[in-house]
Image (cartoon, rainbow, N blue to C red):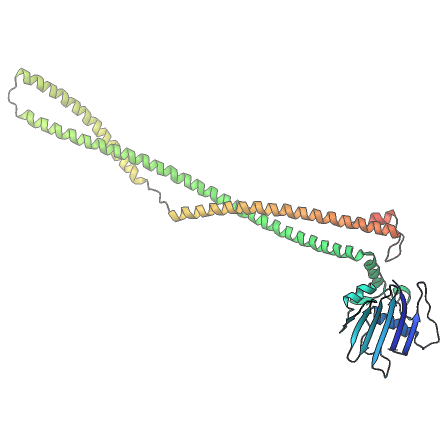
Length: 376
């Protein structure tokens, strides 16, 4: 696109001015202070729109306008008065008006001119329009400012933003990784403490179980002794009855004597049983004494419930431990992916430097040694 002509009405020093342009190089010349710079400002006012206020209006007039005709025949006019601030676009078929123009060009107007406006440190830079007193290509600006402009033009500012973003992500991931490691270490300590406490409780439970079994064995022996004692008492009663009947006999015949002999034999057996009974009574007394020394373990249901809750906590902590280890692996994978992306961007930056052959900041020649020194 190029501008075929421009027409000024009441713009600063010009009441009316019109000029035709060629599609090659055009030169404006004339005496000093006749309005050559006004024409440049008029172009800037129409194409960029960054000149504001009434400084553009010729003194003593009420309405100012600048019209440019493009190579495709489209005519664009900007009009400014006390009550009007608009663009008019005449495409040969219709006139489209854009009223209430603010500090930014209407989007259709900006798309029509397609003039890039760079924003560097909150300052707008228009490379297509050069002021009369400006040094060639930003030489009046600082070196850092020129580097930012070059980065903006070549797209290196995107790499800078990506690098800054990746560095922030890496720092954040490292911080999260450190916190997770500390948390994991703390969980390990808690798990070890719970394992130790569980081991102690398991030992106590085994000891209580053993004592419970010993108590049950003694109870069975005591019940058996009581049963034998009851049989002994019954035998003693039978012996007393037999002795009473024996005294009633003054004389006995042969048959009765044989019966008596049988009863004597039975009595001897009973006597032998009495001896055994005495031994059992002695053992029973010993057993009762031993049983009084054994205390039945008191089983606290609340304590057992607390142990069960702690066992559940151990299981839950083990699950959390597995989850933390999984998150640590995920963070490690993300870190490796980010480093790979940074290396990829560095390689692209090396290609750009190798293509231009010089550093855009210090203008140092780029060779293989310099490229090898650029790394993460």
